Length: 621
Ligand code: CUK
Ligand code: CUA
Image 1 (tube, helix red, strand yellow):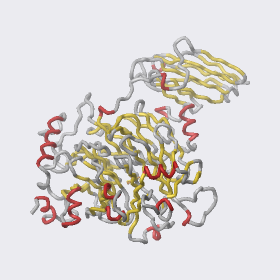
Image 2 (tube, rainbow, N blue to C red):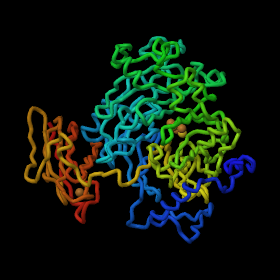
Image 3 (tube, rainbow, N blue to C red):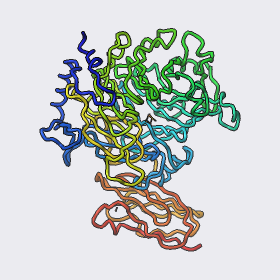
């Protein structure tokens, strides 16, 4: 008898939390204890009074820093949030697809033009924040995130923690999955969910059979869409292999239907495996059609490109309506979740390249519980899968699941209740080749009564779970209310991100306005106002323009001191531009209402902050 098989015989009823078991390998336990000893204050003698009675201390005392950054998507709030882990303190919000006044985002000319060029929508639906990697490890350069609402991908610059590029992806409506092709982030993939006519210009309106969805390969430096592949069926989530070849996307609606009942009529759907070098070769050979300005390669099942001995897309039959897919840290397996089926499908990536029938690459189908959605990894051979319907996270042994296929062993190690209905979950550095294996966040859609009642729209609940101790098992450590609606997250070791303290003027195009350089230049109905700002004044105490002038204000915060921000807020003009130290921003507007307007600084920057004002005088024409 293998010691790994007792989980099966002693298994408790599905809805009970399975108690701790002696399931770990001795080496893993030693490693876990070692990492505990190396961490600050993880173990505490005191009972912290949490219902879970966890003795893991996740507190980060005042003035001390977290071990990790967590980047959580904000769903239809259109933003990214930055948390510290394990404190779960919210450190910053990064607006992406919508304006945000406290960060001046969408108010100054540069960011408002970027939003305008990307379609001019006032919101987006962010799901999957993925951080760029080099050699399968976080390199601290960028985070990328999709817009499911409008078919876009955005890039966040992690030097300044701000969105610096958005691409409106042609031919895609509902960019859902987002992730990088590793090891070196060659592409960022946008996975198109909604099937539409191609191009969507009024043709084929009532012929759903001709609708298609695509994946888009985006160059992370230029944010250009390099190519797309169109496929059968809708697509959902995606994840990239770690060796530069395969990209995986789950999909539903292999029926190519338009209603829910038709979409769920067949027994299986596909996990699609895109053979990236084979696609690149097809593009090089001109085997594409240019649609919407990008080369679109035909990856449907009947396509010529799928007929030969190296198909560009392999269609793998998996249980109906798979949702999440993620590649294991060692790049051995892609694991797709069943959603409507209690199993996950484990695909052997090496075999995928060798077998004739891609279904032969399925090497495991562990039955995990009701509603498996997403899977994360600890680097010790375990997978953690959310069970949406059971409101649980299930920890299971990946190799045991593969063996179980042959020997009917139960790979389930334990389950922990979460509150409630988890979507994604993420473990620290789970998307890299070397997960840290200590913390896991379960992003729960419902909090029900876990927090003070704030009315009919409740916060969601992001729960922090300690996974660093295989002997003790998973331990619920913290509830964190969150504003609608995080879907996915990336957790990155703090030392892998090096944000700037102040701006470097070489990084932007606006003209730096130094002390002594403030002026108003009027010419042909245009007024260019240049001002510095510092504690406690703007470079000009008054600015006079004529009614009807098109006014451009270029304002620099000349402070060198980190954390001293100013802004330029102009009442009744819908303007608030943020100015961090050494930052210059420009804003252009028409002075169409004669009068006096007190321009002020909206950051409480000093004891004389209230006095930091300047008059905008608009003279009647
Ligand atoms: S999705 Cu939302 S819970 Cu967009 Cu990855 Cu699964
Ligand atoms: Cu500057 Cu307040």
